[in-house]
Image (cartoon, rainbow, N blue to C red; front, side, top):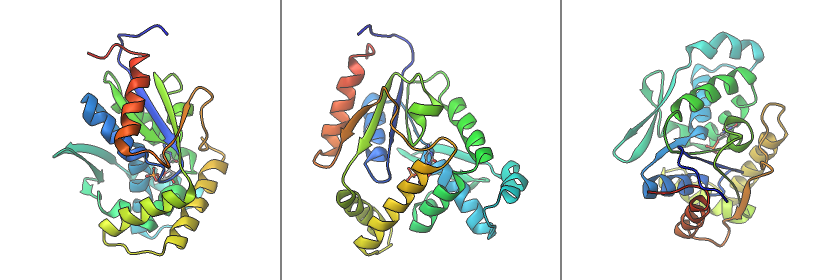
Length: 228
Ligand code: DC
């Protein structure tokens, strides 16, 4: 494989709670590159409608889309998420916000707005992005495309742990059910459904540690780009 000297883009897609965020963060830290959590952006859009108590209809989306400003900022080694200049970093991580994100992400005007922002943010940098449509729609020419998978059981355990850390205690069966419902909704929607790009490399993270997955992806990247 011929190696490139240009900026590189790593696209990480996959179902909910397959380990996309820890992987993307780990890669960004090791390579000292930009990390873009696109799910956080859809979550912030979902929280906008939740907070306004607005039903998700085409009409309400059209009427509100220009009033939604979403910004990711990098402070103290973490990604902070701002919705209309208000810090919603914690608020977007609840179960309610997860479903709201999936619900709002079905609408084309929302996707168009966020995809444009994602492409702008990634301009002229080496970058790792994680989401559902990065390898298929946002960056179909990404340098390296990874598609993560893991069993529903391990995903539910991981998500239960994440929620508990944030003070939300929830039954594992309900978590599993919600994850599967969201995956179904994300993969069957009309606009940019979640799917593996043809040229993506699938990694099953069920029995891998975070470090193992990060190292595996960096090895794959080294086959494609000259890392300094
Ligand atoms: O990755 P996450 O769980 O934070 O994503 C929340 C929701 O946002 C997900 O269920 C679907 C939507 N999403 C999307 O449609 N496209 C993306 N690139 C990222 C997330």
